[in-house]
Length: 97
Image (tube, rainbow, N blue to C red; front, side):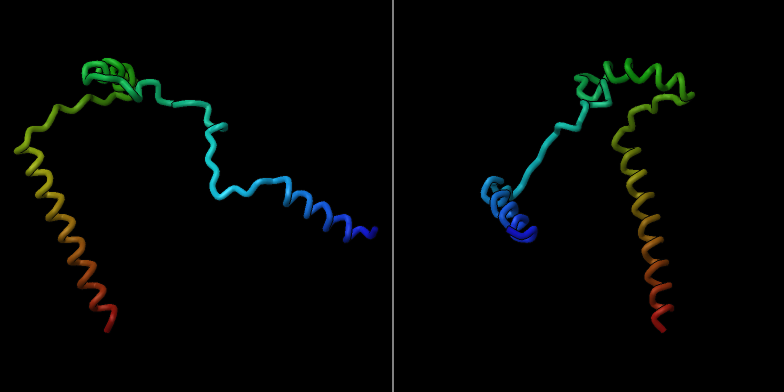
């Protein structure tokens, strides 16, 4: 038997022995969650757990925004994005010439 024939026989045997898989998903390499507080329940628990991190970085926890403040922020963002898109549209029109 030649070397090429041996390889062909090995390939045929491997083809019969290995089942065909359409899709495979494993989590064997995942060591676990790297965020220990990912599934905490209440806001007070989150604030307590954030306290050491905030102190270490020098940040302060922001206050909750009411609906009026959120509406103002949304409007400012919407206007700014519209302005950016308008500028892009104008520049694109000029480039096309």
